[in-house]
Length: 301
Image 1: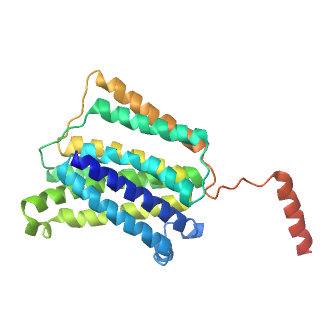
Image 2: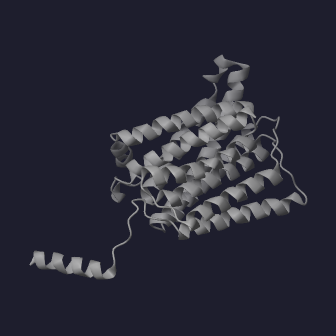
Image 3: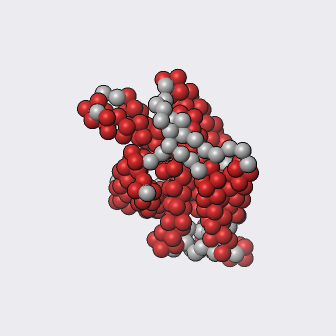
């Protein structure tokens, strides 16, 4: 139970971090994407630094939760970050969420809840072997590169969603290092500094954070956040079962698990179709655009 409470606190911190970082990232010009200039511009923004502080708080709560519970349990609980984010969006960024947006959020949350209830992920007892770490690293890096390449084919919401998935997978992989590091710390605190998992955790976390900043800068948060929130727990369950021996139900339970996944996909589709302006503004009418264009042309003459 304590691991669930800690995971909920981590979700609240992560939601706050996402909104603050998106508020800062949307002020950075698009041409700075995937460049060090993006990070240099953000670190001078107090709002972004506040988001990083919230992200650190989320990391602390997440590490504490993983030290007490299974990876396949803790990470999926973080899906509550999505409704937290939607509420903060409406309060902090002036986003007006319609019924379709809330229906999408509810559908996605129901899908994840159904998947978790039917899968019933349990704790594992095995420690990943060197071969498993290598395989997981290769698959994760390959997946991230593929998603980045796909993201370049889209603009705005499509790009934000693809990069959000890449960041979610990256954070899920980071969680595997967090779990292993907390296990090492519990058995021998002095050995943690000499373990490679600690430094791999830092590298994976920074790379995932970089992907997240590009996702937040590329398009609306209502496109990036669901992709991030859903891909993280799903990837975590895969990592937990294949690397740490954590188990999920099979047999007829697979039907309910598949239904949960279908609801997640449908909810994502609904949210993409109903994504509102983050400024709460309506797009200008065609007539207004034409008059505006003519007045600009007249001034040019």
